[in-house]
Image (tube, rainbow, N blue to C red; front, side, top):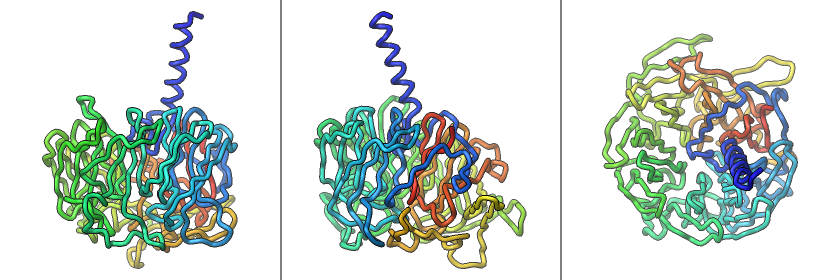
Length: 509
């Protein structure tokens, strides 16, 4: 074989391998989506269609990332007794085909955060790799880069946030840079709400090879925003940032900005009063789509002007569960508290459909961004499976208070060694309501919607009608009560990867 032919053949193999991987938290293209199909039916509780799983010594909650037959994720350093806060994590690399541990590296950090939080913890940020380097973020205040063989390259003691979705762009590692720290109990106080720009949370880009700061935005971002790198029709790489959320964030004005990923510069800003930025922002045909109070907005990426507003709370069609059967009803759920009408970070734009979960009802919503139509489908709150027994589905009881606490079995919040490792009682709930949701992800024709209990809904995202026929399957990531998780599902080589409080799981063959 000629050298040129051999080189092209090798390049083709590398490109093919890359196309099958999930190298960062938001997937290969930054939109939480791959074209290749993945399993749609499984049960970890019954060990059905499970390729392998490994028991982890300690809690962790980030999305597994995969490149060239390696899986990267992180957990906390093991605790010796029940614990509520922690700061030190372990970076893991495992074999994608077998789950065998290849290497582990400690990443200590300064600031304690609440363990197994229903919004995030120190382990939440997914790793990101370009195939030569892999970067891990400890949200307690450290970023470390390794070769794929685990050799340390650089370390920066920078504070980040749990809900950042770091990515690699043009030789730079982009993440959410936090400046104001948590208090000693691992909570973020409200005292920074009037802080100067120097204390604002921003996106920051580091040189992937050296860790040197390359650029920092100046528009400000909310610490709970889920960041998705995207591309305009012109080829320009951009990201939409948002400001506004709980705990008195200082960044102003509330609203969104479009940022150029070449240098972090702000292209435009759209102020929005009482805006909550804890969501993803999807771009389609140079329009950015997102949720604002009781409305869905579409904004022109060139001008920053609103082009369409659709109500998601007045006279909406809902396919509800009513006394054991389905009926279609028109409802007006109205305004939820504090400007929140979607479960935080539960939304994802897929084709013309913008999916989201309602904030105070167990409804999966879908907006057609081309036509402005909106409809909802009620989903069961939780699935429980036990070997040799029938499935149990729990439906919402509107007569019972606190939808989010209605469970078949509450999350025990125990690690694999039986230690209780959490501090926020909301983590014991069903994963609906006031929590930071795992973002949905897409493989082929299906949307995978995980909740905190380990229940996973598989939805035909392009179904003509969002009704019960669009629900392809409801699966589990383990026994009810023992499968707490906050990561998205990731996909590689036709398999699904999941990370629970006790296990790393590979689904499918």
